[in-house]
Structures are given as structure tokens and as C-alpha cells.
Length: 490
Image 1 (cartoon, helix red, strand yellow):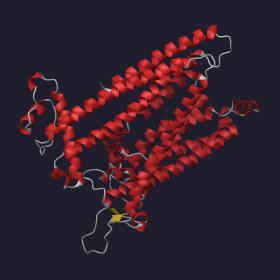
Image 2 (cartoon, one colour; image 1 turned 45 degrees about the vertical axis):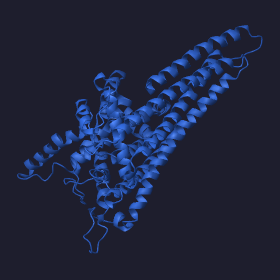
Image 3 (cartoon, helix red, strand yellow; image 1 turned 30 degrees about the vertical axis):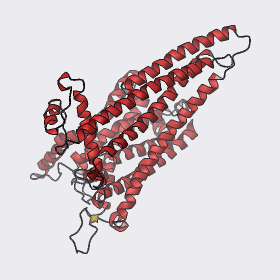
Image 4 (cartoon, one colour; image 1 turned 45 degrees about the horizontal axis):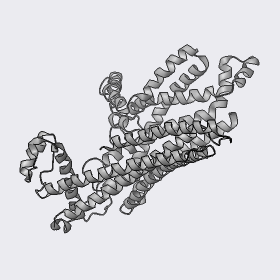
């Protein structure tokens, strides 16, 4: 039985328990001589929780435990010569057994294969007909081990299914027995919900901490091979080691060209997105009728739903060649604007950021108290004067926070930069030339055959940590400004 079907059965048991618990509570409350502590539906939810939650926890624990046990049992069946080999080779053999076991499941129950071939040469074409690709160095001894693996997995799944259903039925039974007029079902349900919310918050925090530490440890490993000055003060990005015996053994891992390109492209994007997005927000908040607003705002926010790779194609196919041809027409020869340039990437990224700026700014402007508008208009100010002298100063802290959040979004963009600005780590102030960003180089360093012990790969973690600190600082500053705004005007 699949885990999806088992989960459906457990939830069904919980729903039945809810219905029975709710009905039983109503009957007892109707005939009770004392005031009930909780309403009937709380008793139903308590029965549901007792039936579902213990069974789900058991499913998770059983799945992890049985997988580890089966893996260990299969590993012990591998031939003795594998034990003398490297850990990677033994892990590779175990992975090949798993792949073979998945392939054998394709022919289970097929009358034509009542007996599975014990030779891999005979088995390969059979599995290939069913779309199963196996490694060419798969050995014959792996076939019986793979069959044992499937058998152990089936037995573990069957035992886990039976136990999970019994636990769900037992929980529902205990919940129904606990239904009493004075039972504190509401307190129990709210306590479970509180613990659930706490668990969700803890998972989010632990995930963030795990991401940070995973980058931090690899970054420390990187700086054991490359000096801090080479990374933070270097102006050349050439992540290759020098020849043996040469003086520069660390290669060139200069961060400055990448950081400059990241900030430069984000600045050009904000230079285009902020005026357009802010003016659109002012129009929608102060001038547009309800009918126009209901049409224009959703259309503007459609831009936020377009994948960034589409913007990249748009920049590479349309915007970049257009700017190059325009510059060629102006110069009367070769164009002074490259098809892949800071201007191209910044312009297209600015188009992508317009809905972020307009939507956030529109919400902040509309949050300014109506009394401030009425007071200004009552004193004889025009609508434009009210916007310029009252509304925008009042909304300025929130708008600044929105712009900082948008800037952090621009700094983390990758696909547009790859297709519109190129991958050349140049250090220049000319917006018509190509540059690249930190995110692009992270992708480059983690593409292809990887050796996570070499600085050429570990530098991606150092770049990621730098980008994380940069965007985190901007987000914290933006949230500080927004919080200050809310305290002042709510």
C-alpha cells in the first residue's frame, strides 16, 4: 500500500472520529445537568487529532527507521571485496542495487517473468524495453540483493501500514471514550494548535539557520586555501590555480568586479523601476477611479508573475539587439552599446521590478490616514499639493522600506543577468559594456563536474555568504523603517 493511500485512510478514520465525537458530545450536552466546558465540535476535533497525529508521527518515524534498517541489511549483503574499497565505491554499489530494485519492480507481476533472469546481460534488454536505464557496470550478484531489497521494503511497508491503521483506530477510540461534558477538549485542541504553530515557526528558523551554517562552514573551508585579501580586495576574477612552482598559488578570486557588477546592474534597474513604479502607485492610489484601478493594478501585477527566464529571453532577443542597432545608427558605424551590457540587464530588470515598486508603494500610500488628505484639502490645497506636501512625506518611510526590499530582489536576480549582461567579470563604469554579478558566478562555479574540496567550487559558498549578508542587511534595514512607519501612523 502506498503512503498516499495510507494517509487517506488515516484521515478518513479521523473524519469519522470527528463526526462520532461531535454527535456524542451533542447528545451528552443535551442531557447533562452541569454546564459543559467545551462546545461539541471541540470534542470532535480532539478525537480527530488523537486519531491522525499519532499515526502520522508513527508513519514518519517508521519510514525513516525502516529505510535505514533495510539499507544496512542490504549493505551487509554486498560482497566482501566491496568492504575493502573506498566508501564512495561502496555507496555507489548500494545506489546501483537501489536502481536495479526499482527496475525489477517494473516486471513484478508480469506472467512472462515468473522467474527473474539471474544474468544482468539477459535482464538489461528486458528493463530497457520498460524505460529503465541501468549502469553498464552493474554486476550479476546485485540481482538477488535487489530482490531481497524489494522484499524487505514490502514487508516493512505492510507492517507499518497495519500498525499505523491500528494506532489511528486506537486514538479515535480513546478520543471517543474521553468525551464528557466537563472534558477540557477546547484546551486540548488549542494546546495542540499552539504546539503546531510553534513547530512551524521552529522549522522556518531552523531551516534558515541550517542554510547559514551550511554556507558558513564551506566558506571557512574556502578561506583556509585562499587569503581574505585575495577575495575581498582582489580586482581580478580568474578562479584558477597557478602552475606548480609559481609564486601565486592561490589564483585570482577577486570579489570587487562581481560586487561592483551586482550593485551597478541593480542601481540601473532601480533607476528605471522606481520612477515608473512610484508614479503608477500615485496614480492608482490618488487619481484612478475604482473601475480603472480594478483593471490597471491586476494588469500591472501580471509582470510579477512572468518567469525571469522569459525576461532574459526578451533582453537577449529584443532589447539588447535594439540598443546595439540604435547606437550603431547614431555612431554611423559599429555601435557603442553592446548587446550584452549593464544597460540592457538593468533596463529589463527594471521592467520586472515595476510591479514590486508599484504594489508596495500603492499599499503604503493608501494606508496614510484619510484625515490627513481631508485636512489638507480643507485648507485649500490642491490635490497635487496634497500629494507632494502631505501624503508623500507621510508615506516616505514606508516607501523607502519598499524600495530597499525591491533592491534586495534585484541584487539576487540571476537569469536576466546571464542572458542580458553576460558572464564577463569586468570592472568598469561604462554602462554600455558587459559586466556580471555574484549570482551568475555562483551558478558558473557549481556547474559541471564538481569537486567540493577545491577552491574553485568552494568559492561559490563564499560568494553566497557575501550575498546573504548584503541582502540580509538591506532587508533588516527596510523592516526597521517599515516598523517605524507603522508605529507612527497606525
